[in-house]
Length: 124
Image (cartoon, rainbow, N blue to C red; front, side, top):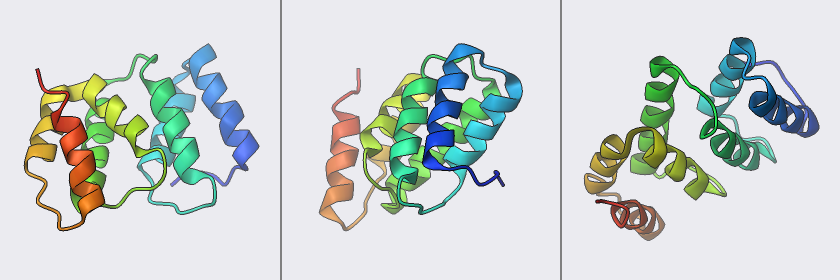
């Protein structure tokens, strides 16, 4: 799990992620990103972290965890605002894995299919 931090503390943590990329900060941010919390600003914070992660040197384990989490959120339709930032991160980290998840996305909800089609439009 991750410690409770306010919205402003998470924003500062995201800035710290870019400045120093300390392993403990990266790990904490990844744990928050992977968590299924539903706080008021959690979706926006995840979007910000997704944008920041693209500029970090992430280890294979973190990259795999992030892509698997984003793919699961897409296929289950379990996501919140600014989800395209997460999809962009997944495309950046492992294009083939997220394309495969989007191609296999047979969710009945139209908004989920729209996101899957958006991902598939980024196929080479």
